[in-house]
Amino acid sequence: MATTTKTATDDLQGQVLDTIRKGQEAVVDGLRSWTEAAEQFVPRTAAWPGADRYPSPAELVDTTYDFAFELLKAQRDFFHKAIQVTTPLYEKLEEQGTKAAKSVKS
Image (cartoon, rainbow, N blue to C red; front, side, top):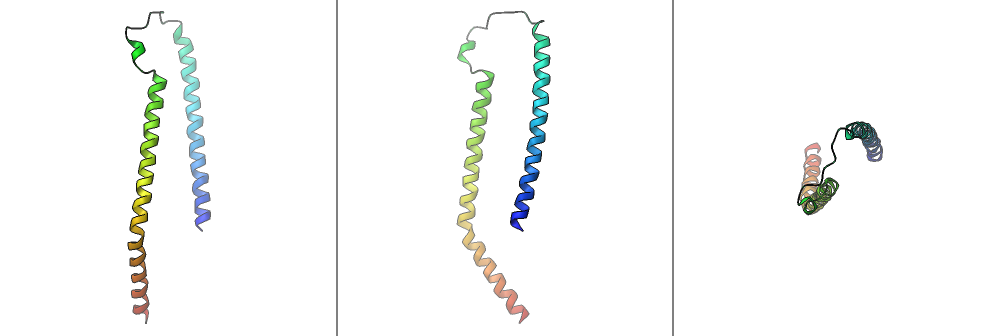
């Protein structure tokens, strides 16, 4: 049953991600068209002083997502460790619950 649930979950996640990607592609296509149309109305000017000292928008995106990736990775590791150290307690409680249920049935 776990395999079936995992397969269904994987399928649903795949469909959601596919839908998101298609929506993002449509937005990017729209932005491309808008940018191409708007460029003709924007005058050419020199870069503002000191602009080279700041990251580009692409660098900001990369830095932000790299940080988010590392944060999620750290959270995943934390939760796996928390599960690992608390599993003996849960197993003991489950064992005691099973014993109690058997004694009630007797």
